[in-house]
Length: 215
Image (cartoon, rainbow, N blue to C red; front, top):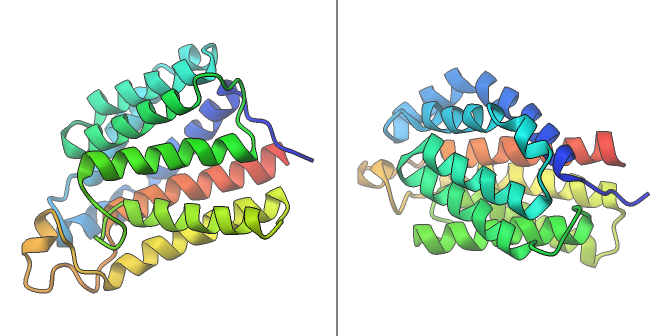
């Protein structure tokens, strides 16, 4: 059975994600205190809670407009560099899906790839630099590989989740190229990147949502 996610479905996924991000507060903040400024979770959670404050409005919008609204809301709600990156990602996704009514296996990849490209371009960063990009990049690489190998849609979603987890875990051994961790003697080696952790949470929730709700 092929999955189809409406704008309202996507908002429901975001509701689940917002809860999981909120629950991760102590862990992510402690992790970020070792490698960053210690405010990643506070800022990200603030942005997601702001999105939740307009969730009923978002559910009534067409997909592209909804994604743009989410991007603008995250940009203002998160603030700082992370806000710009998340905002840019969602706004790029809205442009890539301007003529799409529902998300399916192909358009979901298009959406996530547009987000990845925008985040890399705006942040002037690459995979392997110990950032949130690593979870998204490896998740999408696994997604594409599963599609190319003819996996069913459940298998593709499981590949997205596993790839995101591997991307997150790989940041533990990476040297930070940007940010506060890059100024540490060991450049953050031995610790997970908090941005990769929270990006992974989002992709885990997305994978689980598609499998449990839409498939």
